Length: 362
Ligand code: AHG
Ligand code: MN
Ligand code: MN
Image 1: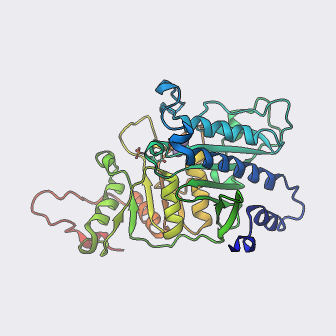
Image 2 (image 1 turned 60 degrees about the vertical axis):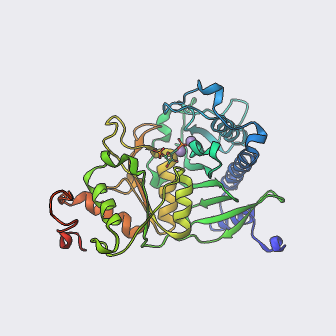
Image 3 (image 1 turned 120 degrees about the vertical axis):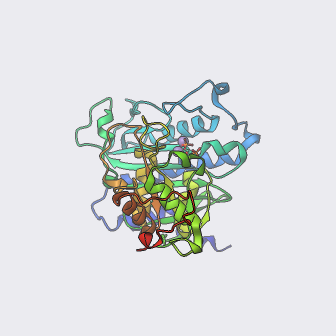
């Protein structure tokens, strides 16, 4: 097997670092610690029922800050991320989907200059049915003088300030997909060597697509621009788009992002009217921003539906946001629909579907 000819994650990081001759190596060591956490989670996920890791944590009694029931693997993954990243001296603090407050570095360890924000297990509703899940992470610089304990305000930086972002996907193979601000690279875990090997050196999202992903059970809550976009896709060849679309919904954003990085597509979890107290379903700091950075670095686009997601100034650690990402031309179209006055898309009465066809043409 020609694995020795492949570039390892460590080699890739060293080669990337050569662009910054004065870099200390802390950043690379941090990424390797994150990768270690992902490998440990991959192992837990792979054992499934055999490892006794499926099902709810604490008999379903444990609810996280999102108001969601924690799975055993949510908690296990969170603990692995914390334990494997707190000791090395690269971080000034962490924040996790599974913990309401920022996580401090224990006093016995040195503090470093970065912040790590993560969703330890994304798509965890899929764990028990053996569908792909993943871990998402975002790395920010800590403010120069970060107080102890690390305040929430240290984390409230727009996504454009991320120095790195990525995810691990635990699917048929485990992969790590990473950007350090110089494109997007994909690594496949060699389960025998325990090494992430560079298998996808330059992931690029095609600008056009015929595939979209949205949870259609929310359609009655969609705002007009989203309803219009989906309706046009569904109308297919004879509709205003003049082509047929395919639809996917895995309910693991990380798996949808991965599909889109591999072959294009558009993902939408837009703001809707289901619960007016929530600006969307997904969380800005550890879901939308890292995926947004990956998309932008791969030539795609990440948006709230209206503006680039990376421009949003966060207001709280667990803030939710509408999220649309993927193939650039589709995301830009959805943004345009938000700017344009809503056309009448009702198909009641005798009016043929999309009778105002010309209105929808570019
Ligand atoms: P998490 O498991 O980290 O809470 O995130 C789940 C998210 C995301 O992965 C997915 O796209 C979405 O929730 C699925 O939502 P629906 O259940 O509404 O389809
Ligand atoms: Mn998630
Ligand atoms: Mn999660």
